[in-house]
Length: 110
Image 1 (cartoon, rainbow, N blue to C red):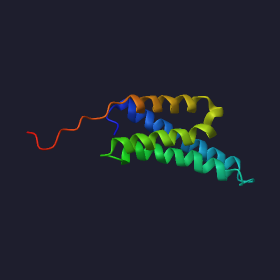
Image 2 (image 1 turned 90 degrees about the vertical axis):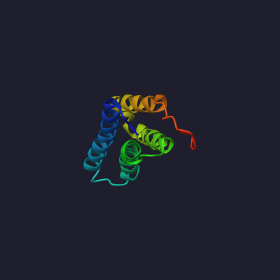
Image 3 (image 1 turned 45 degrees about the vertical axis):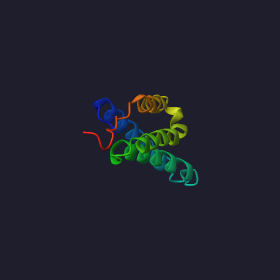
Image 4 (image 1 turned 120 degrees about the vertical axis):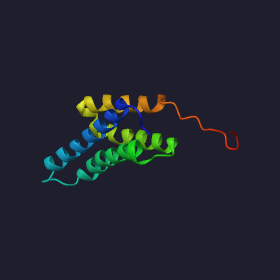
C-alpha cells in the first residue's frame, strides 16, 4: 500500500518500536508473568497489524488502512509512557488517513 519512502520508514519504525518495547517488557517481567497477558498482545499485536497493513495487504487499500490504524490504536496505550512512540503512532495514523486512494478505472471503457 505504501508507495512513499517516508511511509515505509514510518511503518517500519512504529512496528519496530512496538516490538522492541514488547521485548523489554518480556525481559523486565519474567519474574511476574501475569502483566505480560496485557503487554505482549498489545505491543506485538499492534506491531504485526501495522506491518500487515503496510506491506502484506496489496490490493485492498481500505483493509490496509484499517489494519494500520488498528495496530496503532492497539499499541498506543501500552507505549504512551515513552512519549516518542505515541507521537510516531499518531503521525502514522495521520499519514494513513490523508493518503489518497488510487483511482479505479471504470470497467468496460477503453
